[in-house]
Image (cartoon, rainbow, N blue to C red; front, side, top):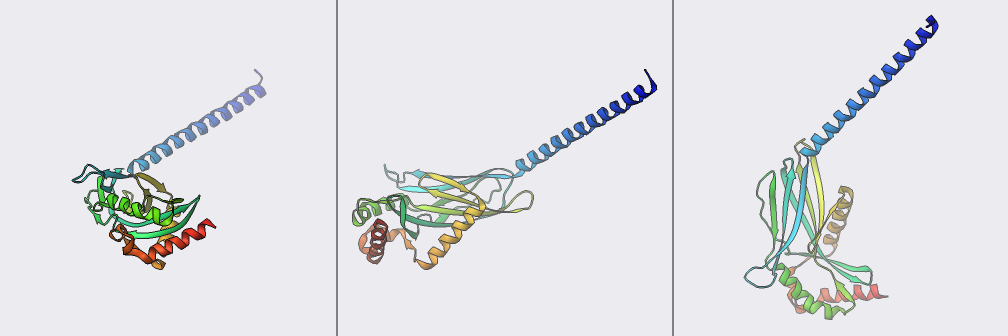
Length: 228
């Protein structure tokens, strides 16, 4: 082999070895990065919200409660807030949102950093809501759909990396929808302002139309406007 050819071969070989070294370094970096991300994910709490029905001294489902649990990393300084409302739907649009209280009025925190975190309960809340439906649907008209009570949960906590977090879940009936933080924050702000402008009604007052005559008239006006 000529000296020129030998030098060229050695130069090319050096380039190949350098490229191989770079590729190996990149692969090692990616592997280390994936391992680091996996470690972070393992430290992150995985919050689960379940809305459950139960029978209390009855053969019917009288009560609904919410259980909040967390797997994964520990949770510190867990705090829970909530807003509830009823929606009246006409065709495909919501005619009115009525804020109300008392559906979940008791909270039973465990103080745990993992597993069961807290439980929200009411007293015969599912039963009282269906008593409300019994008179409200005929009063508002058969084409008005009164949806299951909606509750927006706002949870704040500190994770294992000492980062502050805000987490939102929308609960309607037995369905739970986990919201992106910006979406949840916007909805919380909207519904909070609604509570300021519209007086919330306690669920116990919904048992009979005579208890909330003025509210029923308001609902009828909103429903009529939605039908136009």
